[in-house]
Image 1 (cartoon, rainbow, N blue to C red):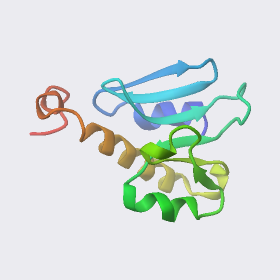
Image 2: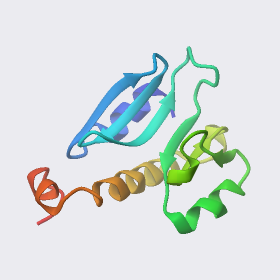
Image 3: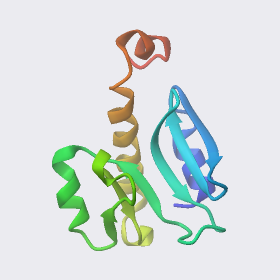
Image 4: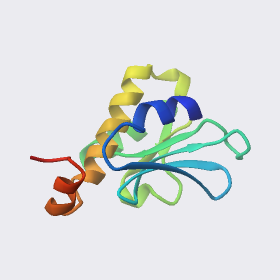
Length: 119
């Protein structure tokens, strides 16, 4: 997934904002809380994709080839896909959507309603 792909994938989801942080990372947030990040071409590791995962999936995913615990964010159960071409696009989109859902679920119920995330 590249920058354009990430923008197309997540931009329409309720409450999502995209911003470049640390000069070389495109960060996707829901209501200001990060759920995914892409290393831009000028970074040390261009194309690496980082996102939040469920606690019980963290170890299973990090045992897969091309996936490792995310630097600085592993304790919050984030993974880094170092070989994004190894995984199909639909797998990546599903993982990003789940990361979004995990973070959005931690918002207050009131805020979730305001963003149109719950009935």
